Length: 284
Image (cartoon, rainbow, N blue to C red; front, side, top):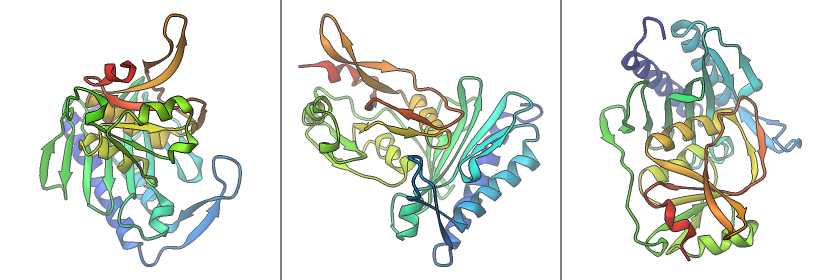
């Protein structure tokens, strides 16, 4: 990373996220919205002036502070080639539809720094609570930062004796999932459904508000998946999918999520749970 070290990069990224958050907040009552093509090929998505302005803040910071680094950004399907093996992923406004609806939750901005197969650093800013979640390069700790003043180290959450002690959260209603996923989710004490920002949805797992997440097949993108993969794995959470075995039939197996360079359609359901509780998925 040249003359930069992990501490300086962490400070630069946090300040850039903070500026993007302020810009998005300032756009709440004056934004302009435009329809765009969704991942399924239909004109059912939206972007706003807040998306555009926030992405411009990231790009300016990258050009000034990280020359030669690549960039993969959501707006305009941005692709800037890397000259040194490092690249950023940027989702300037995660949860744009929630932002347009003026929701008081489910809106975020996300950035990650990648080298090879490792997420070197990642930060997610919650627009409404003004909290940040993330870690700097070289650190084994993930922090929940309140208005950049109070740092709270995040941990693994509760160790469960059984799934009956825990709570699961879904992206879509349970009836949209497979029968096998339904059986697993009903083993938890209760479950709930929450949409909008993928980043703030994941943060509820990191904060210990729920004990597992489950989501259905669909499009995955570098700007959505990369920062949440980095933070989740840093905290010890694992990704699992069902596989067929000769001896036990369908079982849940851990897998290593790929760091995408382009959007990809995933064909399987995914569960995210801490490694200390993973064995409970296959208990009868």
